[in-house]
Image (tube, rainbow, N blue to C red; front, side, top):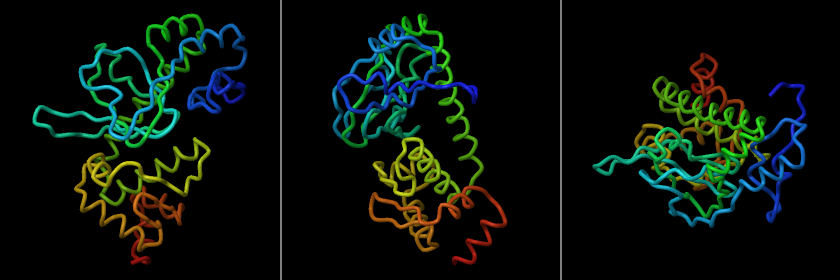
Amino acid sequence: MDSGTNVLDLSQLRRSCSSCALSELCLPAGIGNDDLERLDTAVRDKRTLDRGGMLYRDGDPFEALYVVRSGSLKTFVQDDSGDVQILGFHLPGEIIGFDALASNRHVSQAEALERSSICELPYARLQQVTSEVPALHRQLMRVISREVIEEHRHLVMMGRQQAQEQLAIFLKSLADRYQRLQRDSTALTLSMSRYDIANYLGLVVETVSRLFSRLEEMGVLEVNRKSVRICRPDLLAELCRSSPVAASKQRDAG
């Protein structure tokens, strides 16, 4: 959006819940109450998922986009031999389900990493509303574009970085997303397993465990099982890229 444009947060569309993860989507000011009411009719709550519960599977027909209201999910693909490749981890306010837009069937799977609640946006109804509210259509396209850009960035980044940089980038990305959610960006709760992180980064789990220990020894992190406190955000940021400064600090810490 233009920097000078006022925004109206979709959390104003709250119905039965006290807060709504749809606040990730913002609309330009000037949308009238009638438009907001039409948009509200496109949002449907979905049953809470327990840990390990599937939101959709590969081959399921495309019916809706989904917003994570609370908890977290992972998306992944699985080949005929059962090998899994994790595509991403999704936090409150983030939209998933775009993989089915092209073929009208999902080509990945989405699984709850913990007890999670989902808002469902039935796509047929969403299309109707976005045709009536052009500002929502433009913002939805921005969200889709952002997801594509993030996927491309991840592929390029993971192909170029060293293992320690990969983990640092992963943690920095989570911290940035926490900040967007107005959470403490230095206190991360990793709902995903070390195996999931290793799979996502293209590493082996032993390497990930060793790197967590190394970053803790360097004073960058404090790790207590799934709780990770970032003690040195500045140093973590330096470790996200190859630089003489990062290398020097790493040598000094060692």
